[in-house]
Length: 258
Ligand SMILES: Cc1cc2nc3c(=O)[nH]c(=O)nc-3n(C[C@H](O)[C@H](O)[C@H](O)COP(=O)(O)OP(=O)(O)OC[C@H]3O[C@@H](n4cnc5c(N)ncnc54)[C@H](O)[C@@H]3O)c2cc1C
Image 1 (tube, rainbow, N blue to C red):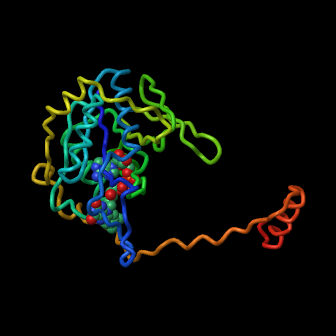
Image 2 (cartoon, rainbow, N blue to C red; image 1 turned 60 degrees about the horizontal axis):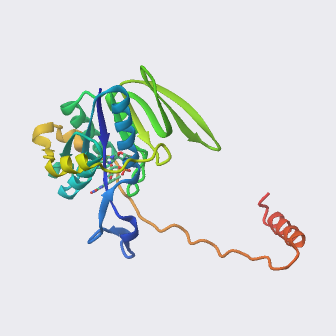
Image 3 (tube, helix red, strand yellow; image 1 turned 135 degrees about the vertical axis):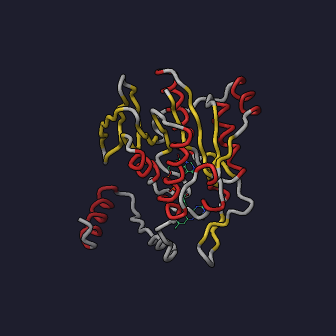
């Protein structure tokens, strides 16, 4: 089987500062890491490769620093890695990003399965997996909390309200993976050696040949605003729990909460 995992380099959230004047993220001097859900996508891809035979490739679109997450994936068992970069890819929204990733999949695939994180911790749209699956015409399994591998495809459990939905798709498919899906393995010594020797293949638009028209980002940021401040909570003091509950119910009824 030919299996792909898509990896995104994201800022270390605890180090991010917000520019209060422009409400933008100040990324200067902020550390970078592999998007947390992508670690679980790597694990799911390696489990499938072990179960069905085959190799896992990793692709990221990002600056040179993002090669470190490709090396990390190779230390875990991924065999080859591509980085997509071009001036024409700058400022890509989710549609343009999915278009670029699809072009890379066409150039390096076809793949039987493409694994992604369920969503990134910086963009947080969760749109890439479904957009990509639609563009590729593959089966789409999103937000997998549990993955079962079958002969012809995969079945996932997806959180839906207080329960789970079971969804099945045949190969080829795109599957987005949550942090509940598995426990990522640790790097092996063999993997660490392979990651040091890894030659990342860099692909620009001369290689991918995506028409300028398809790289346009239709979404526009028209405004930024902080979320409303949380209202101050109200404490109900007292020793008697029953009296406190009665007072709470009265207060909620007054405020027409139920
Ligand atoms: C109008 C607009 C302008 C933007 N301009 C910029 C900009 O100038 N610079 C910038 O850095 N971002 C920009 N972005 C953000 C950029 O669109 C997103 O980072 C990107 O489209 C991925 O979206 P997401 O993080 O929400 O992905 P999600 O759908 O939340 O990610 C899910 C999974 O998809 C995969 N994935 C996502 N992104 C990548 C990637 N790059 N490579 C490989 N796999 C990936 C990963 O497996 C990830 O876990 C812009 C967004 C908008 C709407």
